[in-house]
Structure formats: C-alpha cells, structure tokens
Image (cartoon, rainbow, N blue to C red; front, side):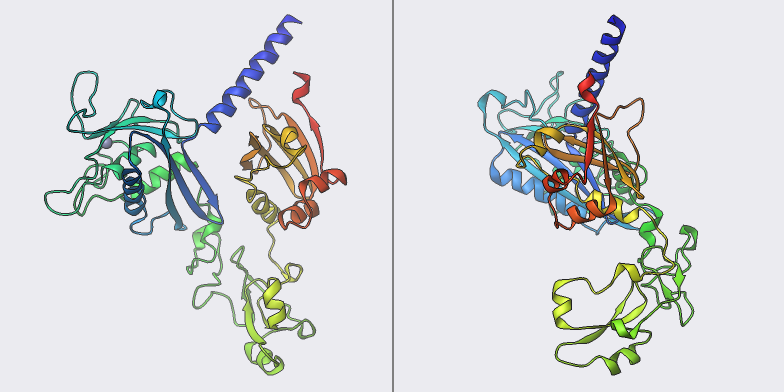
Length: 413
Ligand SMILES: [Zn+2]
C-alpha cells in the first residue's frame, strides 16, 4: 500500500512538472497549414512604451526581413513578439519573472549599466544560461542604448540579436545577426532560421506534404504533379490532386454544374453574376452562381476521386483547437481544464490533446503513452469533430447528446 501511494505521488509530481514546463514556454511555435509562426513573449521591467515598441519592431523587422522559409518544402516562417510591462515595483528586477514570458530588466546605461558579477559592463545581455532550449525562460538586463545608431549608418540590431538567444542561437552562430549586429550582415542566415525552427518547433515542422501546391513537382517527396506547376505534370485528361499531388481522372457531372473543360462550362454557365472557376479538388470547371459563392466553398469533398489521405483532415480540424480558450464555458472548463487527454475518434484514428487552465496547449497525432500518462480518455466520431470545428454544435451540446464520451483516469490517484 505504501509503495502504491509513493508511485501515485511520483506520478502526480511528474505530471505537474510536465504541465509546468509546457506552460512556461516563453518562445512558442505554431505550425498550421504548412505555415510556421514563432512567438516570443517578453516582459519588460523599467522600459518605456516607446522602447518596448522599438525593440519589438526591431526583432520582427530583422527576423521577417527576407520573408524567411524553412525545410525542403519552403514553409514560410513568421516571427512575432508579444510584450508586457511589469509595473509592480516589487518585481522590477524580474524576480520572479511572470509566467509565460522572458523577462528583461531595463536601466539607463549612463547611471546604471548592465553588468555581470565581475563588474564587466554591457550594452545588454541575457543571464546564464543565456541560450534558450525549446523556448524555455530566459532573463536579461538591457540598457537604454540598445539599438543605438551605428557609426556607419543605420542602427545596432541588439534586440534582434538577443531574440536570437531567446530562440536558441549562440553567439557567432553563422556569418549573420549572431556575429554582426549592424551593417548588411546583421540579419539571420538560412541556417539560423532552420536551427530556430528545429529548436522551437521540433524536427518535422515542414513535412513533405507541404511541398504539394508550391508550384514545383517534387519527385523526392512522392509527387507526380503539382496543381500550381505549369505544366502540372498530368496528362491532358487528368487533374492533379491538391492534397496529395498525384494525378487523377476527374469525374465531372454537368448536372451538378461541373464540366470537364472551361469551354464546356462557359457555354452552359450563363445568368447574372455566374462564372466558371477551376476546382482544384475535383479537377472540374464549376459553374458558380453568386449566391453559392457567397455562402460556401465551391467544391464538394465527396466528389474527390483517387485522393486517398485518411485522417489528415480530422487532424487539421483538431489543430484548429490549439490556443482555444474555453475558460468561459461552464462545466467544460473545470471538467477539461488541465488534462492530458487521449482521444479516440471512430474510423479516424487516435490523437491526444493537452489542456492547461482551460486553454488547449497541444494537439498530437498519437496517443500519450508511457512514460507519460493520460489523465482522461475521450471517445467521439468524425462527424462530431467536424460539426464542432464548423461551429454547427457546441462542445457542451455534443457532451449533452452523448456524442463525446469521456472517462477520467486521474481520479484514481
Ligand atoms: Zn549575444
């Protein structure tokens, strides 16, 4: 009995620890529809609004400068900075730093320059460890001459350089921003961008499927065509599936307003505000009336042929939940507030969802398995997930109707 108790307590501590480390990520990654967004959250103590704004601008301008991309499929990467101001005089030295933020103390260089324990002074620096791993918290001490004018013109991009450390880069990493803070070279190298994405988002943030639709036929990624390439790579009576980038034979039924060629469509499609549009999903030319175009997508998913990618759409729908804040929903919030949920969807596979304080932190395409433990199992079906994602029914309603069934595992603790 004693051992059992010890085991459960250890398990609880482990879970608490994992939840805390996840919630304390100060640099975060969102990879959605093959677009990657890195968000750096910084709290400033002692900075003016103008300084906070200038530094945010510097980080975003320098890092987004050349329209960065990563991976073989060139997934676009966007860098965002969110700032907050510490006004509590008791916390002015970033002790303790606010949860979910890197924390920077700011002082005037002339009277109180940033210095280390040996008395060396700096324009600004990050306290040890100095380099964030997987987005973990860093604290630092910056002065008011960060981003001062550079002698050869322009400014020193100190804030953007320090942001490199917050994203896991070391000094002198490549012949760019981590080595030069002013001049033409003061911008991230491709290697810097790739290393940041790998550090914050993990190894597969830009998977092979992201190549589909980039205008290039990437044979190495299993593509036989690309709908945006000219020519697409398919023979004349075939179309290129925009999801799997393989050729298929379109099945166009004029009775449904779908035509095999543009010419056929245009001769049949008349009337006020109607027009012919190529439908990449079905490979047909659709005669679209204004009324339809206003309200719903022009394609009908059931008409897609030879395009076999089960589960993908459900995972994409689930991923829309990341960041979803359900703290305002009574019952659902306390019940699913901070959980490690294994989600079983009939005919669509197994997923997991991690929530903290009624916010969805993570959606994964696999179950939570030992050494981690789920705190809850949930069971539902594809139609319910779609209905919720399309806001046809609420989560509450789905629970009421028994379309989502769950069992709590943590109550046994
Ligand atoms: Zn540095």
